[in-house]
Image (cartoon, rainbow, N blue to C red; front, side, top):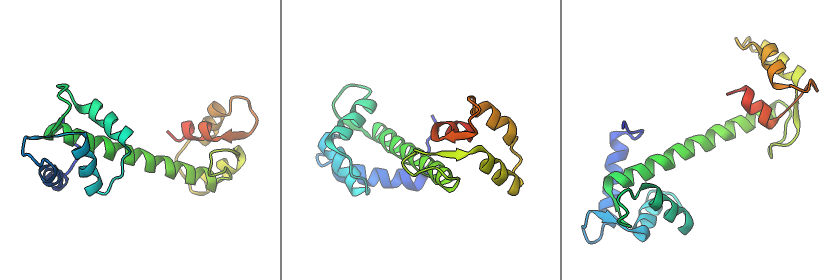
Length: 149
């Protein structure tokens, strides 16, 4: 499987991995994993660490070999990317009149005007029609997100 990580990131991972593989066994345990992630600027809870361990410990050894460790880092990276997509989505929702906590609604009309003002090539009328199924002219966060998928 192709990795999402650059060669530079892989090298950094190897460095961190080797630094915490105190006994040079080629595996790190849960505690070492936590320390490694901390050193890489993350701050996982014990619960998250054990979850990560379970997700990647393919051979059930209770330890993580380097390839498994890379998988953890990739998953973390993917999660961060998703979180930032979500925050962009929330920013857009708020800009259109919704609330940051995902409550509130966007006026379909305002959305229509904005899309047209930016000359975006989105068939916004069709999108609104498909999304605003109750015809209220208001779009809540989930509908908004669905619409912009």
